[in-house]
Each structure stands twice: as C-alpha cells, then as structure tokens.
Length: 348
Image (cartoon, rainbow, N blue to C red):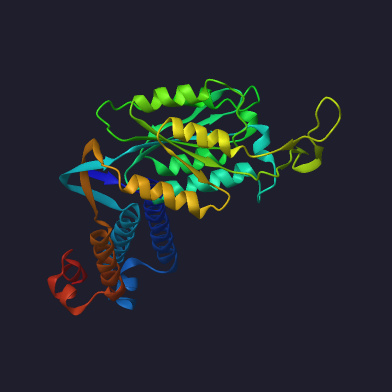
C-alpha cells in the first residue's frame, strides 16, 4: 500500500526529456562543427582524451539525480500496518440564537460574537466528543450535523448570522424540537444541549418542550449573553451603521437579556444556567461538566499507518549528483585501458 502526498511535483519530470533533447542537439552541433574544422583522424590526435561515452554517462547520472530528487518532493508514503482507533466521548449540540436582538452591542463586540466565542472556545476544550450546531430565531435550522470534525464546526460557526433564518424572533422551542433529531446514536448515554441566547423567548410551551427532551436523556444547559439594562439593535449597510431598529411608534427598541427565561428552561430540564458575559466562565463550566461525564464508544476506525519515504529518494538523488560532479568529460587511464569501443585499435 502506498500513497503520494504531493503528486503535482511529477510535472517537474518533464524537464528530463527536455534536457535529453538539448543534449542531443548540442552534441550534433559539436560534431557538425568539428567536421567543418578538420577531419576525424586529426581531431582524434588533437583531443585524444575526448569521450562521448563519458558525456553521456555524466548526463545519465545528472538526470537520475534530478529524477530521484523530484520523487522525494512528491513524498511517496508506504502503508506499514492497520491501526484500530476507538473514539470515546459524548454528543454536544450547541443551539445558537441568531435573532436580530443578538446584534445588540451592550457587551463587546456584540451578543452574537460573544456567543460564537463561547462555542468556539468550548469546542477547543473538547476531546473526541462529537459536536453539532443549530441556529435559530423565529425558526430553527441545522447549521452543522453532529460530527467529530471540530475544524468544520469552527468554519460553519463563523458564518452564522441573522440572515440565515427566514423569520425573526426567539423561538427556543424550535431549537429544542430540532435537537431531538440530532442525536443519532441510540447507545449514547450522555447527550448535551447547550443553548446560548439573550433569553428573549416568546413561546409559552418552551419549558414543557425542554422537560420532554430531558426525559429522553438530553442534559440541557443555558448560557445568557447581554445585560439586563440592554441596548439598541444597530442597523448596518455594507458594514456601516446607519441607525437603530425602531418600533412602529418610531422609538428605538431596547433589547434586554432575560435570564429568568433561560434559568426556567434549565431548571425544567434539571440543567444549569450560566452567565455568559465573561467568556471563560461558561467555557470552563461546560468543559468541566463534559469532562466528568461518562464517555461512550461511538466510532471505531481501521486505517493504514503511512510512513514518509522521501528520505530514501533524496539520498539516492544526492548520490547520483555527487557521482556526476566527480565524473569528467575526458577519458581516464582506466577507461583507455578497457577500450570499450575499440577506439585504440581503430587508431592503429
């Protein structure tokens, strides 16, 4: 079993036939010029040590060296054995509020960015746990299905914004209902749902939905972002703020965090409410809870353990180049004695 890491470097091998063609053209030009200068017998007397064979040999060593160096750049890898990897962890789903109220800047830089920071730093502290992300406002959408790919989670999280949902509002129950479909491993005993919001929920049945989800084995924790004093919702156009959101009477809307709603949801699900205005507090709290949870094996993989082999080709390539350096175009004494092409007999 083998694998090529950087196959694009194979294109460099095209220089080898180009160099061969150039060498043949130069050789033809030299022979043609020599014939015009003098006859072959006289040239052999004037330059008795000249050797076409040595020139060809030098070229061969040089091209072999270049070829092996290019192969070392490609870095071929050879599979040595199969490894079995057992992954253990828990399932963690983040429900992120992306309603317009999350754009309020009563905490820096704004509530939404603060929520993203909390999720991102929490993911960084997870081990082999699986993560999923839900976004919601007036309705909910799956942003990232549950996965072990934490890098993908970071990427999708950065793109989350209020424009991704079709209706505004803060319907936490929508996120709770969607979360039921996320946990696709029936053998997983530890499932966590982390809701991050400013708590402006207007649905009466949210607590009941949370309790029903808790009865199915999902542990629900809520994180509140924003201040009780609140702040206006900025309206931006092409990145520049053009004003604040107003109500029908033309008055600026002040959105406030509602911790009592988030506390009620957590209490109904036997979970916990965490203040999220200081990023490290929920990150450390959630990470500690998950770290102490019982881990379940949810994935077993077999794969080939590939090892780099470039060093062998690099060494061989350098060896041929060193030989090329110490080879001379002229005949050496031992080569004249061997007389591979009967050149000495021909002269006599």
